[in-house]
Amino acid sequence: MAVEGIRKEQKEERKSSVPSAIVRDMIAWMTADRLIGPKLQNGEIRKKLVEPAWKCPSCFHLTKVDLPDCTAELLSLAQNPNIARVILQLHGGGYIGAMRNAYRSFAGLYNEIGGGINVFTPDYRVAPENPYPAALEDALSAYEWLLQTGVSPGKIVIAGDSAGGGLAAALCLYLKDHGMQLPEGLILMSPWTDLTASGESYETNYTLDPLFGNTRESMIYNMDYVGEEDPENPYISPLFGSFEGFPPMLIQAGSIEMLLSDSVSLAKKAKEAGVKVRLSIYEGMFHVFQMGELMLPESRRAWEEAGKFLRVLDRIRNGGFSPQEEEELYN
Image (cartoon, rainbow, N blue to C red):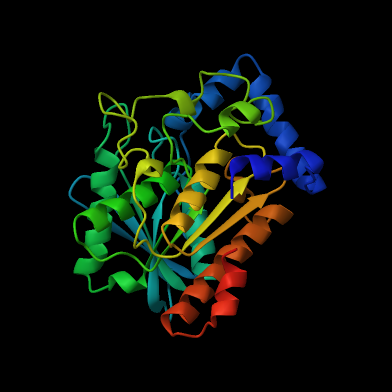
């Protein structure tokens, strides 16, 4: 599906729920503020954010894990964890922001929609202190740690949002290129797959995006992670990679985010390579609107869709789909 075709549909209707519209307007108001706005858009606030220690709910057990160059957290149910699969979660933050409490909440949601499955989240190294390939190396270390603990690749789903979504796709490319077994599937929320910022939506959504719009000084134009490397390197911008043999993918994006093309072009290229892809564009929604978790209607639907995708993977593994059902799910 071409980007232009999707744009025509959006021009006809940009509806979103009232709560989501309020949040969207609040984000736009904050980014328009001359003092807070630039720091919010360029990631300075994210980098300097100081949070209270996360209090793990009693229903979970949180295990800290030391990887070669970073730490990670394994969230599991305190009783009767479901070991049918593991989510390897790669957090967002423009490759300049470390993990924060929101992703511990994300881990809890993945656990819930996955029927109690474990969630493994590395706090990978970030730029500018650690440019490419640090984040990819740490993501690979996390994947290898899961394998070393006895988890089979066919029971790992890699999930990520924004930079974490791009990193998830880059990790999968690396695994494929190096002859390693691929994961069961990918869940990508507003993935940042093109660090050249060459997609059509970087222009067409420039005035619409409440988070990154109306400026060229935001994180999406920051080259700290790229460093001296070529931004078209597929391990940096996975959109430029080859997707033959990739596992099924769920890609979600908001219709007004500047990174929309990153999702649309990725889905198109993967489908052309024969990959099973479900692309869901939520009307009137902004970058990583899933941060609304269960409080916003669209966020709630997105998480429900992710849960359905995990159940779909179960049926694919067990040969439970007819060709007609697969056509309906991935188109």
